Length: 96
Image 1: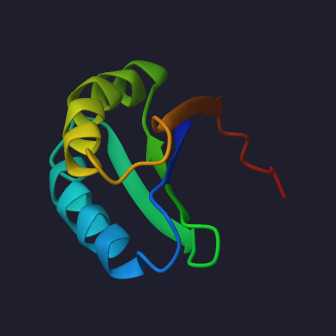
Image 2 (image 1 turned 60 degrees about the vertical axis):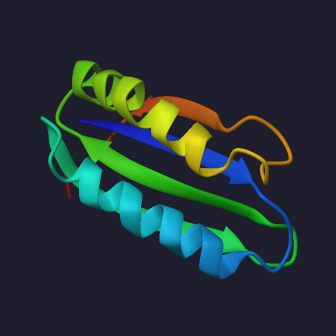
């Protein structure tokens, strides 16, 4: 299993905007091949928001990023303080 960590900075006190973007993104994420789950988080003080999504494989995570990247960039166009960042990680699940 793989995780994708995505972070965007859109500015302080933009929680409702971030939640709207997250809700719209989740509706698409859950239709993509290999999707397992997603959690969204943020800091209203710094304006940094993000998501952690889980995927069956690295290929699924990368394919999802190719679909979602342009959608997120369009959603934050004009309000993003920096380009969104995206990282992929292999998930370790404890044996006990």
